[in-house]
Amino acid sequence: MKKKILLLLMLVTYCLQAQTNESFTRYTYELTYTKRLDSKTKQTSICYLDVYKNKSIFGDKYLIEFQNIWTKNDTLKDRDKRYNILADAKQKYSGQAFSFIIEKENNKFKQYNKIWTNAFYVIQNANEIIWHIEPQTIKWNNYTVQQATAFFEGRNWTVLFTKEIALNNGPYKFTNLPGFVVKAWDSDLHYTFEFINSEKITEHYNYLARINQYQEVTLPQYQKLFKNHYNKTYRAFWGESQTNVEQMAIAFPLDKKIGEVENPIDLSYKQ
Image 1 (cartoon, rainbow, N blue to C red):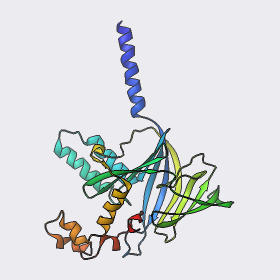
Image 2 (image 1 turned 90 degrees about the horizontal axis):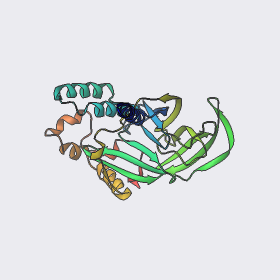
Image 3 (image 1 turned 45 degrees about the vertical axis):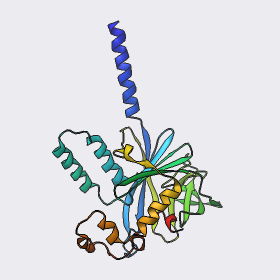
Image 4 (image 1 turned 30 degrees about the vertical axis):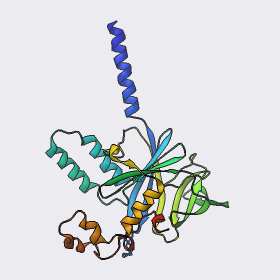
């Protein structure tokens, strides 16, 4: 009887470990982007596309790493220790290109996003992008690729995809193609994704801290949230959380609308 109980405990422990340490393949992209319209300086960031058996998750490397550390330490009883860990992680992983996570499962996108402290998510169909695929093939970094174009979320996009990687996936929301997207860029060259490499990962990742605080919104509500945000002046936005707004003038033109300065990847709020 004791042997049976021990065997059962070992089996339960194994199952929990198997669920916790589910392996996945990480596809890494380099992103070159224009963060602000009032600057000609290009910035670079690293993005992860983590592909599991039945789903994939896309996000900025620095956001994912910080959220992962936050989640793992969020239950620490020593508040000072937790604060120091998070402060160190925040400094180490600051400067991400965007603050959203996109989960793809069952031909649906679930995009988690934040505007200041307002945390929400929206569900979209993964086949919304209508691609025009060019028939000819070319070589890109030793891959045989085809080109496809589409207008999506206020931008004209061009992608290169290959059938040599057996995935219908890619960076951001670029799916619904007969292959894997290795490069994507918009017509203004404000955002350019380039595939770097892939690797097997066995470590468990927590992609969002306090995920239960994210509230579902409809697509029209989602677009309205961003339209309201980008139509605010910096003065109005910072006035919601800062007592001395003028100190923010060093980094932000207070009397300009946020949408006149910042350059998000999704421009559908302008439509």
